[in-house]
Image (cartoon, rainbow, N blue to C red; front, side):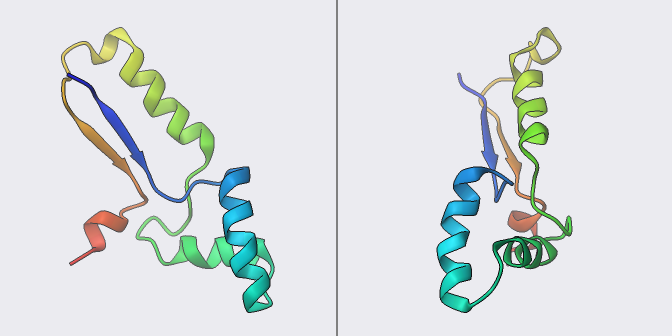
Length: 83
C-alpha cells in the first residue's frame, strides 16, 4: 500500500510560472495573484514547499510505520470548503 500527499497550490517556481501567465493576462503582479489565491482558502495562504516536505518526511519515517493507503490533502482546506 502507498501513502500519498496531495498538495494544493504551493509557493514553487512552477506555480509562479503557471500563475505568471494568468497574472500577465490580467495585468497583475504574480505576487498579488498568489496572495489573492491564498486568501480564498480557509488557511488564508498558499503552502510553502517546506510544509509539504515535512509531511513527506513524516510519511517516510518510523513514526508513520502503521499508516497504509492514506491520502493526505495539503490544500489549505480547499477540499473541505468544496460543496
